[in-house]
Length: 93
Image (tube, rainbow, N blue to C red; front, side, top):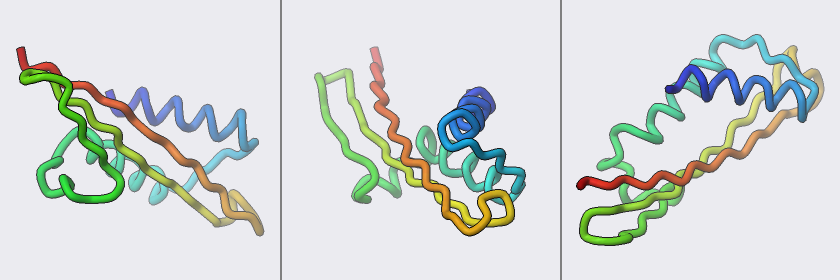
């Protein structure tokens, strides 16, 4: 579920980067990007951030890369950057 992933990302940002990001706009963009990881894949098929691999006649795998960055009052003079990659395997059997 997307909300669980968002909570985990917030915790990673807090524990690794020492930041609490309060920007609703930033988190709305994160939700949208992660939702696109699992939906609307057809228009993204030839993009550089998605890599497809056929494992068998019934199974496909893809690797989806996202890079988030933010610089605002929460980060001060610095830009926070968080790369995330998902590896998803779909079995249609």
